[in-house]
Length: 589
Ligand code: HC0
Image 1: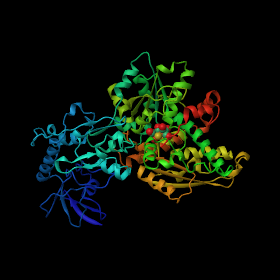
Image 2: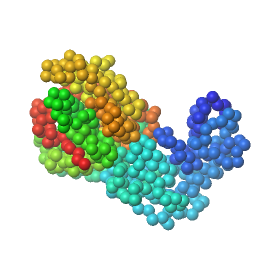
Image 3: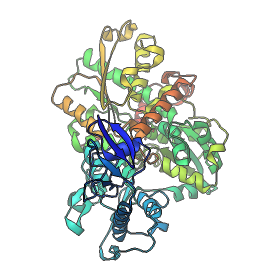
Image 4: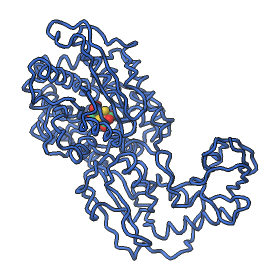
C-alpha cells in the first residue's frame, strides 16, 4: 500500500497504481488522449502531465506509478500551460475543419481545445504542407491521416486486442504516420474491418463509412419498401448514444423510433438468430453423426461459428486451412437479408426489386459482409445498407426525436418474433448457449441440465472459456451420442481467437464446437457501438442482454413460432435444399 497526496488530498492505493488511476479514485479528472482503459500505456501525448513535488519535469500521470510520500498537483499554472501548449501543437498538425468533420461534437481533441480555450493558435499551421490522402476504399472504415494525432490507440488496439496488426507506425519525426503494409489501402491489407480502432480513435482519423443519407433517400422514395432489422446487441447500447446510462434496455423505444423515422417494417435480426440456431445446431449434429457413426474421414471438426464477419476475415487471412471447419451458416444478418427479398416479399406480396433492406448493427465489419459477393442469394443484394448503432443514433437526433420519452412498441411481423436465446447472441458465449439449449433438447427431449436454462460456464468476460455438457438419455435416433461429452470453447477478441486456433492447429484441443466473436465482449463491444467503450461498460451491456433473455416468454430458438412457421411454409426442414440455397455459404481460400 502506498500513501500519497493529490491536490492536497491524502489517498492510499496499491503499489503499481498510476497517478492517473489514483486521481480517478479521488474523482479528479486529468485529461488524456493516448491513454485508453483497454490498452497498454503509451505515454506519448503527454496531455495528462501533472506537477510532482521535488521534480523539475512534469511526469505523464498515465505512465508514472505512485510512490510513498508523493505530492502531486494536477491543476497548477505550470501544468495548465504545458497542457495548453501540447493541445496547441497537436492542433497545428491537425486538419481542424471541425464543422465538416464526421466526428464533430464527438471528438476528444475538440473537447480539449474547448476546455483549454485554444482560440488563437500559437504555432504555425502545418497541415497544408503535408500531402495527406484519405483512404476511403473500404466499405467499413474511412482513414483520414489529416485528422490523426498519432496517439497510436488504433495501433495498440489492432496489435494487442486483435492480433491483426493491420495498422502500424511508419517513418520517424515529423514524417511519422499511422500506416498499413506498404501504405496500401485498409481494404487491401489484413484489416478485418472489426472497427475496434474506430471505437478507440479520439478524433475523426478513423470513422465508419456512413450510409445515413442513402437510407434517408430510400425512406423518402415512395416506390421503395424499406425493411429494417436490428441486431441483438444494439438494444442494450443505443441508449448510451442518446444520453442514457450503459446497461439500459431500449428495445421498445428503439422500435418506436424506427417506425417514426419512416421504415415500412421494423423487424428483428433476433428472428434470424433463432433460425441460425436451428440450421447451425442441426449442422453440428450432422457433422457429429458423420464422424461418429459413418466414420467419414472428411468431416471437419471442431465446427466453428461463422456469424462474426471480423472473425471470418481473420480466419481467411490467418488460418485458411481451417475454412472448412466453419459452419456453412450465413450470419443472422445475411439470413435475414436473403429471406427479406424472398419469403417476406412473398408473404407481403411485394416486388423484391422494390425492397430496400437495411440493418442496424453494432459492427463495422457487417458493412463489408453485406458487400461480399456470396451475399446475393435472393437474386439481389440481400442487405442493401448496414448502419451502426451510432449511425442510428444520428438519424434519431436528425429527426428531432426525444428518445428517452418515447413509448415502447413491438416489432412487426413476419420475421419480428424472437426468443431469449437469440438476444444472448449479442454477448460473448451467447451463440454457444443458445445452440446448447436447442441441440441438447433435440437430442434428449429434455432441457439442458443447467439452472433455469442459464448455461453459466459459457458466460463471462474471460478471453477463452471451455465448457463440457454430458449428454444422457438420448432419443433413439441420437443414441450414438449417449454418454458423450460435448466439448465446447468460447473466445472473444481476435487475440483470444488466435489462442484457440493455435491449440486446434497444434493438436492440443479436443473441442467439438467453437464460438468465436471478433470483438471484446462479443457484439456488445462491437466496433459500431457507442463510444466510449471499456470493460465496465461492456459488462453492463452484457448484464442487460441476460436480463432481456430472462424476461422473454420463450427462451429457446426451436420454440420461436415464426421459425416453426417458416420451416412449415417455406424452408421445409433445417439444412434443407432451400435452406442451403438461401441461408448457407462456403468461404473459400
Ligand atoms: Fe452480432 Fe449476430 S450477434 S454477429 O454480434 O450471430 O454485429 O448484435 O447481429 O448477424 O444475430 C453483430 C450482434 C449480430 C449476426 C446476430 C450473429
